[in-house]
Image (cartoon, rainbow, N blue to C red):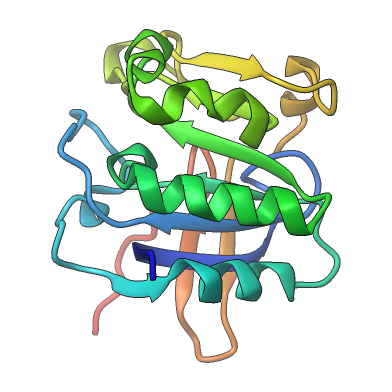
Length: 190
């Protein structure tokens, strides 16, 4: 069975793509872009190992969502698991899929998964985060990022109204800060 190392999952978000979406963050990234908002996703040994079929089932059971956004860490550093997950979501639903990657499109095209992505995702946002080119709007973190629409489901204009930040408080009190320009909470002590 194919497994994926998962950092986290939020079932309902409006700050990670058009409409109400589920968002999952993969665990592990060797790119380590300076200024990365999610450095806690870099450790390849952290997070939770989950069966891809179980994760797909969990995502497909979420109600009232338009799609799924996959971020990281670096999703494409788990290419077989991500491809298996994308294939299951495509085969079993009409959910839209937005995928973030720190790899440039030219790098992705040289990867085995690269030839499959146009059939498996609606939108790819690709490129390493560059703090000196910060944009933090419309799901574009920095100006060098490339937003590619592989289907007609969305256009780049659909990303402009996406809120830049969101604070999610789970029933158990867990706080998740998310979005392309997430807020930073200060003064909190354990």
